[in-house]
Length: 312
Image: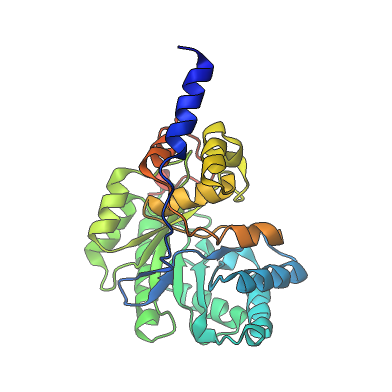
């Protein structure tokens, strides 16, 4: 059988049936709060004007969640931009979901409170919707040191107190492995609402992590969904992704993001281009089983971001 015949058969299989429209916008956290499936990522966006423009485009496109972190160095500009732009869209603070994260330098009982207060002050808000421990290790502590465990336990207890005070509506973690999560679940009085981890067609998290989070009602959120350590479009040029995009009549990036959603993760795509900001939230389509299987079978495995496996 010729390669052309095979290619035509694959194209026909991918093309049918037409996907149905999907309109889900939120999942519910274990706190009861609604959590947008799609948030706007802000990693490496530094210029005050660019931040303002991106948030303007994002609000116009329908984004209602924004993801930042103390280490991104942009909390203050994000807060200023939101305060300036929300009235333009007849929105209030309560209409927006803000996620930020504890810097690894602020791990431990003596630092976590000031770390959170710093985020609140820079953002110019009285509460943060979701606050995550950004990394299971502490700055300046060797990866294999037991000190990491002690400090992150103290940090979590501090976040629990701030959650109970109402300043953090939900708390969670980022880059936690099964081992880190199991450790946390043994002592916590407030379960993490979210675990934000790297996940893409090239880098799949373990089934064990997915099962653990599912059983404990912890939402998994994906970063670096497009490959690369800066949410680049590395994966968008994959021929299978391009083929699926062609028959679905969407862009390759939209295929990559929709695939992540259908794998059970929420997403925080980032772009500093207006058209892409708009496209990244236009994901109200469904990839049928044939198309999902074609994407699932992409065999390349590359980890683009940091590896928490060796953090004690």
